[in-house]
Length: 245
Image 1: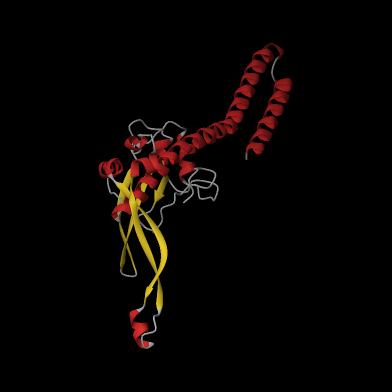
Image 2: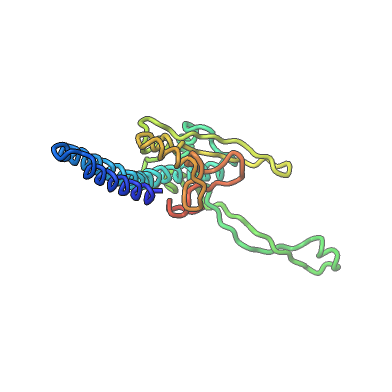
């Protein structure tokens, strides 16, 4: 479409030059030529910007998405720890932050052993028969905060969208999905693309909301987890993010 537009502009320009040369009096030609050149430069600028603006948009979009995804990965790590310790996901930010501040992982060690199988021993007339077992030893505990965030306190602000519209927060939901009569905990953290790209050209944001590609962030939001499926991954491609789970 862009090439066709450039060709049309060139043809119109050639036609105008011929018309000026054939029908316009000599004394008016300089003025009309100036106007014509101004129009040509204006059309050239608009044509250039129609190509350059999407390039700038994509560059800014990728930079902002990377920052948002870093925060969503922190949220996922915190939620996975919450499920490990409590068996559920947190449904609000206050509970999740409090959990990280206070909770501890239990450190365990699995080891193989064997014991007398009394039933088989009786069956074999008192001949001792053994069976294999797994023994889980509790070694101690370790702080969830230290395990995930080490010396950083960024978990206290992970609910804030780091770029885009000022003051925006990620939306957080948690609950259960029932599969085969079993309640499975699920969660979802998300932010609309329009919030992240709030100051970008509206038509380009609307196009971005329609993306459905293996190379892009599909849909109108960036999110991790799901309230409709049992999954804890994000909806971004491998080109974004560093933690693959």
